[in-house]
Length: 61
Image (tube, rainbow, N blue to C red):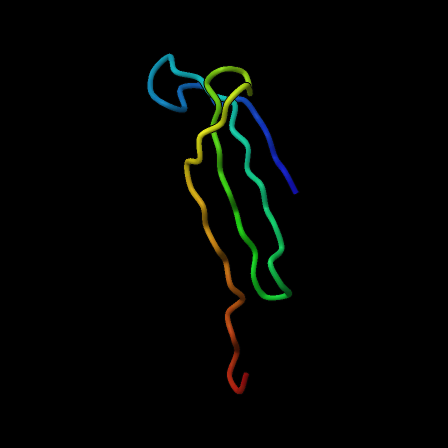
């Protein structure tokens, strides 16, 4: 899933950016969230963060 939107003052006052978040299933218990920003209307992108989420295991798992 990809979410993209305009974020005012993302990189500081007056520095607006197009922000893109990509969510990718790695397996049934793991998801990657990769966040990128563009200050040139999407011509180039810079990674802002790259997170991995893992399902919490319950008791006995």
